[in-house]
Image 1 (tube, rainbow, N blue to C red):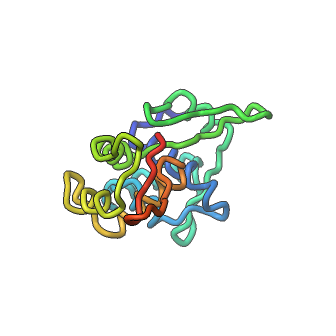
Image 2 (image 1 turned 135 degrees about the vertical axis):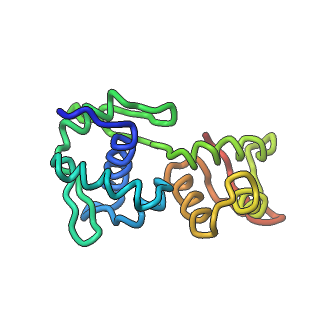
Image 3 (image 1 turned 90 degrees about the vertical axis):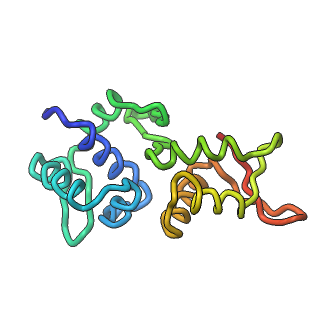
Length: 168
C-alpha cells in the first residue's frame, strides 16, 4: 500500500465518510465544500487517488475502490474528532468524523451554549457567519446540517424561539 500524505488521507476519509450518505457516489462539489479546499489543492489529490486505484471518478462523482485497505488506513489515522467502531463483521465504521471547520465550530459553540446546553439559532448562525470563521451562508447551512446529522446539534423549539440543543 502506498504511503499517503496527510491531505490525501483527509480527502480519502472525507469520501469514505460521505459514501454512506451518497451510496451511488459522492458529488465532487459536496466534498470540495466540506473539505474547504480550493480546486488547485483537491484536484491533484483526486488524480493521485484515482491513479493509485483508491477511488474512481466519473462525471463529478467519486467512489471508493479499495475498501479493505482504506479501512486499515483509517484505523491508523484516526483524528481527535473521529470515533471509529468495529461492526459485528469486523469492518471499521467511521462515526462523527469532523472536518477542521467542524472542530473550530465546536469550540465556538462550547463558548456560546448556556448551562443547559441550549443555543439560540440566530446567535449560532450570526457567530458562524460574522465571527471567527466568516462562513458563507451555504457553508454555514452545510456545517449546521452536518452537525445535526452527526447528532451533535439538535434543533428544538422553545417558547421564545428556535434553539439548538448541544450534545457533544
